[in-house]
Length: 253
Image 1 (cartoon, rainbow, N blue to C red):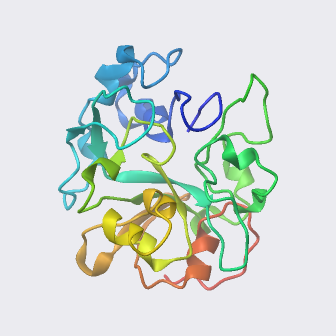
Image 2 (cartoon, helix red, strand yellow):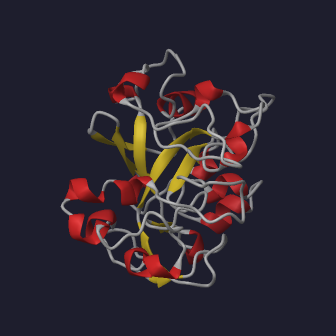
Image 3 (spheres, rainbow, N blue to C red):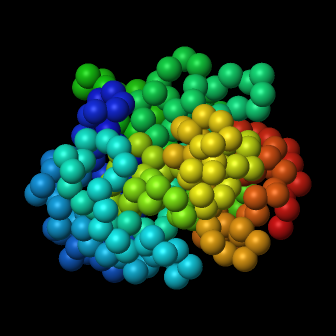
């Protein structure tokens, strides 16, 4: 996500799922996008409202709909829903481990409490007051944990509060980007149920699907696709979510 300003009222620019359009045979659609304007601008409505079958999981009943997202500077304009979100990193810590609660999808990651070793592949980048900072796009070289050990994109849909689902071309904070929280409630396809069990912010940045057993398909940085289940060991899950955390763990696959 690229937002040139502070969260949360500042319009945003591109997001991973828009940036890869030329590489998935969508160059014509990419040509309709004006990157010099915020993605929320009415000029970019054509892009935001396009249904992208390649971004829709067949098991996701919310994918492919035109809805107004639940929050952000959308000016009540509709955007198209989808099924896949980027992995921003570890956004919340284990009990007793303080990490700022909105990590990786906004300029809040510039706070000193945000440990850089918890970043994932697809985190926020941008400028605040025109100033560059330490965060830039990741490369294969920066994924020192190994591309096969690093989650990059995963599924999210919700049976409740449909406007909290995934929107592929709406780059405001968490609608195309999620984070890993070491709580199993954030690995379910039910926003309301997740939020009823604690702080709702991790639920806005959750992963979840309607596949058998709750299996959530993730693409790793090496291009492989493997499921993760809500029963995964949370230490393993968060370790898989960083690019350079240096964790030692047993991969469940």
